[in-house]
Image 1 (tube, rainbow, N blue to C red):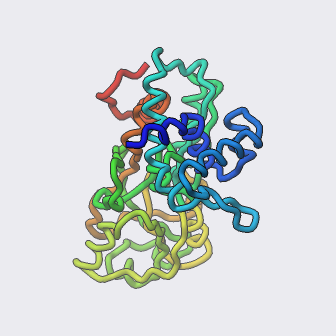
Image 2: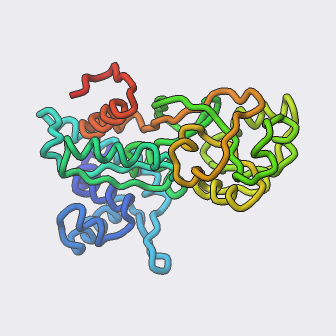
Image 3: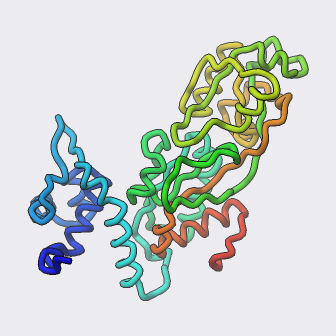
Length: 314
């Protein structure tokens, strides 16, 4: 262990690297740390010399992190979380907290959860800021890199995530699946059978982080593979396609019952066993060292009516 070399790297260097990996902008990093851009550049220069790596390089108008910087991200995030835990001697006080929380979710999840969550949290933490990303732009890797606190998403309960260290999944609520179609669809006034379900084209939601849904495998094994004509990023886009075509869209009943995009559509029960579906909360286990993240976790569970046995909710 080279203690002399290690002594040249301080928490200032690690925090700057952490924020730079999140923002990929010297100016934004400086604003978040309340220092000047030249101070950030100087700190990065020192870190580059100590690590013998460029860390960030410019490509066109964008800054790109090097493989080493990305590889260091989760470790640096954990070190900062551990130090924050050591330094935080008092209980978390939401009424005076002025930090931010970062979440990623699908558009459909946003409609069901995000608005109510923000209103609920704002009552207890009036100075908090939320950064809510589309899951398509930042997925599970955002959790391990410290860019996100939580991901919330609908999924088939049989779908395990891609292998990721220290990712924890917790079910917020279970749901059913329904088949949506336009109000003037040829099947709108008929019972939905497995034969006519398979006779029409389908709209599907893609997600690179999840495996093939159980209902797809079950349908193929017991009957036949459905014909997917269009793949879209989220429920809203799929509902729009349904409005203007004879395509069928299989989705969450809870979303279909609440979303404005589905109001003019007809919902029918699926004519086959599709397993179980749910909306889940996903986080990186080391992030729970942060009292603020633990508090937000408790508030999400409270909002969704899930008992949190790990801590008392105020």
